[in-house]
Image: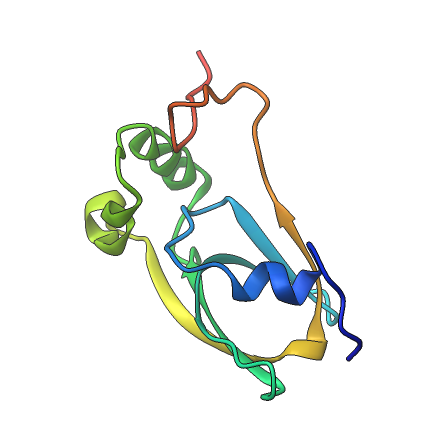
Length: 125
C-alpha cells in the first residue's frame, strides 16, 4: 500500500483510541457487509489483518434502536459505553478480524441537529 498522509482511511482508522458510540461510525467491506465500529483493538502497519471491535445490534429491533438513541442522550462520558448493559440490555459487541484490504470505506455519521455539547442523539418530538 502506498503511503498517504492526512486523512487516508487506514491512518484515520488506526488512530481511533477510544470507544466510538453506537451508530456513529459505519465500516463497509468490499463484500457489502457493514458494521458499526466500537473501537480498534489491533492495527499494525506491517500486518495485513486488523481487529475491529464492532457493535452487535443483531438482537435489536427498530424500537430498541430508538430507545438506544434516547439512552445515548444521557451519556456524559464515552467511558460509559464500556458497560454495554447499562446503555441497552440487547446491545453487545464482537471482534471482527478482517484483512485491511477488504475495508471499502467508512462513514462517520453526524446529525446536523446534534448540539455540540451532547455525545448522543436527540429524540424526535
